Length: 270
Length: 262
Image (cartoon, rainbow over all chains, first blue to last red; front, side):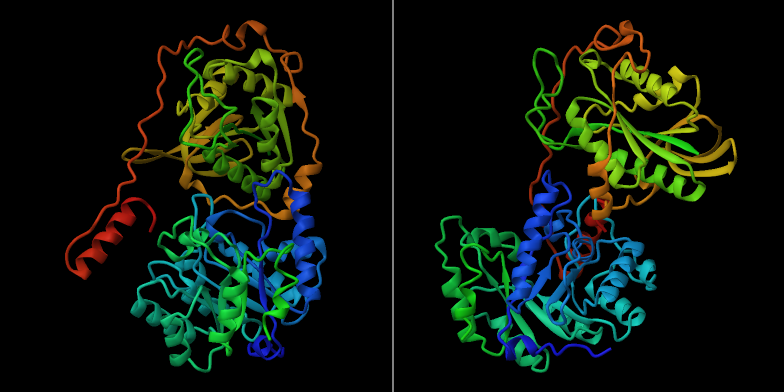
């Protein structure tokens, strides 16, 4: 299997675009699936990479692979990335990985993830590491590398808001465990930790996440400190600025407005 | 094996309000969910079916909106759902509720095993499961952390109590209640959820289950609620751990383990 080139996105100015799958408790599943399909196809038709989250913030949602299967959506090489976290049973984990392999989805973003009372958690013994205390993205990377060799391109998250040395030590372990690209948490300006990441790991492609909602305060939970609700924020201007600051990086668009922003972003990456 | 899993729709919020007149929870004001303990009962029922064959039926008594949790149960692998809904069921205490459920179980017929969650998180009584067994005059075992089938008409159960567990052999038909640790409930698949949308959910009334009207609702409920108050909200105060980094890390791990987070 020939794996894709993670530098492809920067060379070809292709965005990563996050599309949230319908939640498990939705009262309008069919309508939500239609909306998901519409967004998915728009991203694919634009030549970008659609990125599907995995129970983001611990809120139970349907899995990307099962929606793609059920709706018979096209999977183009370099254009689908599935998030995969550690809140699954071993059986579900293997089902997801096997389905992704069968669907031709190569790109996986491996994250520890957010749990909830209702979500199961992988146990160390599930993935052949019984001596460990818990399963994080590092162990999940190792498991996938061992059991699905040469099948996936594995990426990891970088959180510049975590204690710095801990985050860099963890990044080193993630890369040793098989990570070959990095997606940051949302940044809204030059970030010294992202600069350090680029300098310490020059061979690893880095994609910076751009926060596309005007409500910057929603970012509080993701970054771990409170942003006041009345902060003015211009997502398109920030996106443009991030391209200028980090021309060597890809860009991941989170919470992009499909009605108001999506058609405009192509003119920003110039 | 024919299995009935009794489930309940409960308020999702810890912030439930009590009607001062009726002393019952005001259910319209908050989002409703499947009683969390019933997830384990459903999973156990589906696992037993997957292992030994047969069918699993989810059964609930409640307003028409309770149909949603039956569809959720079907999405999780249950074969069908039945909703017991009628104005005369309103106000039933645990005794009247278990009477209604037992009559429905009789009507379903040839049931081998009834599984309930250990209790509902709104009433917290843990009485309905045993009540069903009493009405049906079947054997019962409560707070189970394991169910093993030993022969065609018997199960071996591991029953949790304060100091450990008992191994109890139970002759079928029987009613059991299960605790959180018995399994890891599966998450519904999209395929299951879509299938559940197409399922017909029959609604049974007292006539359908041949219930004695005198034993239903407030009239059939020996319980009289004198006073009901919501529990005091849990403190969410920040705890600061002081000391050396090593001590702080150890204490944090200890505290997370105490809360079953690690």
